[in-house]
Amino acid sequence: MEPPSASAAARAMFLMLTPNESSFEKVEDVPLYVQQATPVFVGLMLLELLVGVLKTGAPVITISDGLTSISAGMISRLPYLLMRGCELSAYVYVWNQHRLVELPWDSPWTWWFTLLGVDFGYYWVHRTAHEVAILWAAHQVHHSSEYYNLTTALRQSLTQQFASWIFYLPLALAVPPSIFAVHIQLNLLYQFWIHTELIRDLGPLEWVFNTPKHHRVHHGRNIYCIDKNYGGILIIWDRLFGTFAEEKEKVIYGLVFPINTFQILHVQLHYYLDLWRRSDTYKTFSDKLSTFIKGPSWQPGKARLGDYENNPKVTGKEVPHYPIWPLHLQVYVVIHFLLVLFIYHDLFEHKMMLSQLTILGMTSYILLTLTSLGFIIDQRPTAAVLEMLRCVVMVTMQRYSLMKPLYPSLAVPTEAFVSLSLLYWALQSFSLLLSTKKKTT
Ligand SMILES: [Zn+2]
Ligand SMILES: [Zn+2]
Image 1 (cartoon, rainbow, N blue to C red):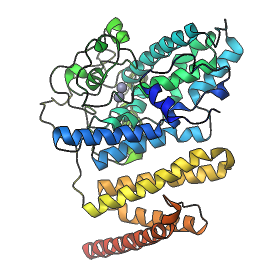
Image 2 (cartoon, rainbow, N blue to C red; image 1 turned 45 degrees about the horizontal axis):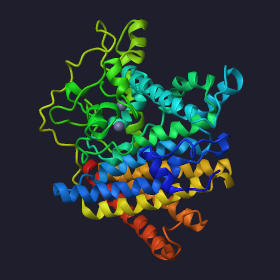
Image 3 (cartoon, protein in one colour; image 1 turned 90 degrees about the vertical axis):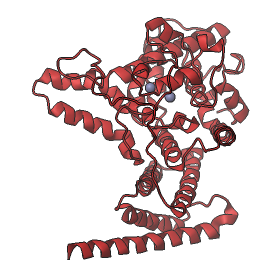
Image 4 (cartoon, rainbow, N blue to C red; image 1 turned 120 degrees about the vertical axis):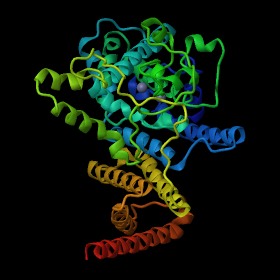
């Protein structure tokens, strides 16, 4: 594996890598550009926050929404701890068994052809993710934020990768896996910086490239925005296949029916249950099946994609769902989020040295933490008990040196903070118990 290089990852984000420096003979030699880009993601998010405050006078990122988006990004990459990723695994299999020709891995022509091929594949991955309800169940995660900023880019689906790989397989008949492994990352990285409201118009670049302006439309729930602008790097596919829309009136972001929760597993999985319930209300097998394979707005008797007549009308005055929660809880959630982020980072750095059981245990801890913090943001009554149990897990982990402080010198304050957290939530749970007892007697 290549040594980490944040500068290469930063340039990769803006298509500023040359074919020469990013063509490799073997898949094993391909740098983990997405992983290396983490400091760039953080740096650009902080920059957006700063510029946003200077420009608009208010923060463009909120703690509740931003942390939910970053949590979704973290969850989406957890399967990579145990496997190489569906897209690349299936690709290598088809290349090994069924390739028709072998394009030279060290030719710029192969590199450029693959850039176009992957982006074309992405257009169809993305379009079907919007037009086939069972695939939308995975992709709706990315659209579930009512904000539009760089954290929204990280709000990725856990389950989408289990279907998207199919669309790239035709490339495996000719393009070496090492070149595909570069471009599948570059395509994803490019799409990070376009999630911002601060860049308004990029002039002639708007003709060819997917830009913040075009992608804002894609995230809108105004009628003119629905099912438009699917492109990854290039917008030409939308112009060619009739799915392009120019930004007009103010875009209102998010799902047509907002979910109003920051509970991360609900964000990731709720639509599967919704679909199942909807199909259950239909009598014929054909209608039940159509619920899953036709558009998310489909209803019996309607065309494949359905119509949007049941959509709530967008007035332009909608305000995103924003929880009113005490400042001390906001500080608490941010500190615990940073602690789990550090464990997450550490887990990816050392995954080769850890047993599968340890990886599964740490993954469960990360999921428990992100769920519990989501419960606190949502201010659910059960949050106190869940967080108390999580604090017990943290104290146990500290005992066995599995819990790491952000810096070694912060070990003692971190330990004290975790113990205080446990005490706080134990008291909260106790007072909750007393109040429910009072209500029932
Ligand atoms: Zn989409
Ligand atoms: Zn997006």
